[in-house]
Image (cartoon, rainbow, N blue to C red; front, side, top):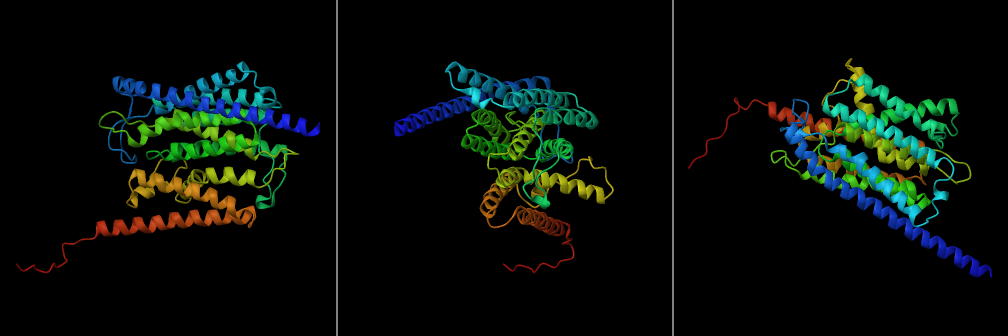
Length: 398
C-alpha cells in the first residue's frame, strides 16, 4: 500500500513538472513572438519620427541609431507572463502552492515597480529625464521590495556577517537595488553587452527556480530570455546604415537592471528551514559582478580625480576593451565569457574556499584584467603617437 501511494505521488509530481515546463516554454515562445512582432515596427516609427541616438565623442557608434529597442521588453514579458499564468489556472494546475506565502504580493509589487521604472525610461529615451529625478524614481521602486517582504537578511559569512537585522537589511537592499539597476544601465555601452549579460543571468535564474519548483519565477525569467533574443539579433547584427540596428535605451536597461535585482535579492534572502547556504549568495554575486564592479571602480576613480561621480566618460571596461583594439563583438564575447567562467569557477571553488577568499580572488582578477587593459592601451597610444619622421629607412635596391 505504501509503495502504491509513493508511486502515485511520484507520478503526480512528474506530471506537474512536465506541465509546468511546458507552460514555461509557452511563456518563452510568446515573449519571443511578441518581441519579433514589435521590434520592426519600432524601427519604422523611429525612422519616421527621427527618434535616434546621435553619435558623439564619448559614444561608441558612428551613425544615428534608434534607442527604443527596450520598449518591447516589459510589454512582451507582461503579455507572455499573464497569458501563461492564466493558462496554468485554465488547465487546473495547482498554482496555489506556487503563489503561497508572499509570492503574489511580491509579483504585484514587482509589476508596479517595473512598470513605473519602464515609463521613466521611456520618457528619458524620448525627451530626457534629469538624473536626480531618475534616482528618486529608482529609490521609490527599490523601496517596494521590502514592502513585499524582500530584503537581504543574511550574508552567509561574507565579511564575517551572517544574519542582518531588519533595520540594516532594508536600507542596504534599497541602495543595492538602485546600484545594480544603474550598473546594468552603465554597462550598456557596446553592442550586445548588457543584453547578453542579462540573458545569461535570466537563463541561470530560470533554471535555478525550475530546480526549486517555483515555476512562476522561472516563467518570468524565461519570458525575459524570449524578448531578449530577437533584440540581440538587431542590436548585434543589425546595420545602422540600413536602419536595422537598435539600442535598448534606458527603458530597456533600467527594466533589466530592476528585474535582475529582484531575482538576486529573492535568491539571496535567507528563509529558515530551506537548507540555504553560501551558494545562494555566490551565484547572484557571480552573475552581477562584472557590471557592479565596473560601476564601483569608475565611481572610485572619478572620486579620486575630483570629477563628479555621475559625469559620463570613457573609463568603463567596455571602453577599455575597444581602446585596447577589440571590436564590439570581440569585447562583448570577452566580457560575457569572463562572467560565465567566473560563475562556473566560483561554484566549483565554493566547497574549497570560503566566501571571503572567493570575494578577494574575484576582486584581484578584476583588478588585474583592468590593469592589463590599461597596459595594452598605453602601448597602442605610444605606438600611434610615435614620430617616424626622424627614423631612417634603408633604401631598397632594385
